[in-house]
Image (tube, rainbow, N blue to C red):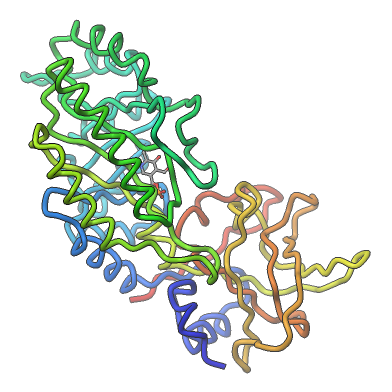
Length: 398
Ligand SMILES: Cc1ncc(COP(=O)(O)O)c(C=O)c1O
């Protein structure tokens, strides 16, 4: 069976490659296609106006070969820890092309961001005060303030938090007080704004509505507080489908819409920044795990795999399954009658569920279940050490 063309964006590799990868390995593994990563970066870059920079959100997949691939394409990077800063520097990225965000930055994080020369996003007056102490340059340190909008944002499923109470940023209602306090520092100057409240959005119109909210806040900073914004960071949030029935995000519509947003805001002469993680990395990877056994328990069909939430935690956290298919080594993709299936892992807890889906009825021990869209929020988001099973192998192709 050849994989249906409608699923080629879900599984990174074609049937022959998936089979080859699965036949050569006996334990769970992730495989990534670097050519697909390069292609996605170029496609998104080409869809965006020149005044929109593109920073890859490292947290979605910090694998060095992936960072090197994006770095070679001229990407900026969005980092959130000292470790991510080091990884980006090792991959050839530089400080001026780096933003640094996080709701609870440690001393080590701030030192690393300053050492690299990254643009720090402050989440409150404490960040400004700490940077005031740490910054030793002759000129004031330019920072961006992250603002949690009071309204005007929507998020389909909670990942970042929409417009509600948030650990991130300064609440919009508190911005006046924040800016008044921040003005006390002669070593730190707010010249940027970051607004990011919604992730995995598949609708370009909804993303643009959120971006217009960011620009409304930016305009207020500019007109009421005289803030000369050189950067408005719109965060990530570009969605991918986890189900062939969902639509794909129209990035050309997003790019055209951002062009209009710039035209609507002539007061703003700086640059916009997008920080996509998922959209760039999810479709580049698959996770594969062998079936150990199958059973029916009180009418529910279970397939037990060699890997569980120690390798793939996202379905348990979000309630959303990765797309799946099954291959039989020496044979190919299984396309017989599919039945509702619960996928469980090897851990001794009934929390160890890696998704549900329709999988072939004749699935048996030794077959391999392939999880698509697993290039983002997968390998490093899992509970790797729980029960001391080995970490999965990571295979980089291309
Ligand atoms: C500050 C920041 N930027 C970018 C991203 C990437 O988001 P996404 O993967 O939805 O594009 C995240 C994700 O949590 C984030 O916290």
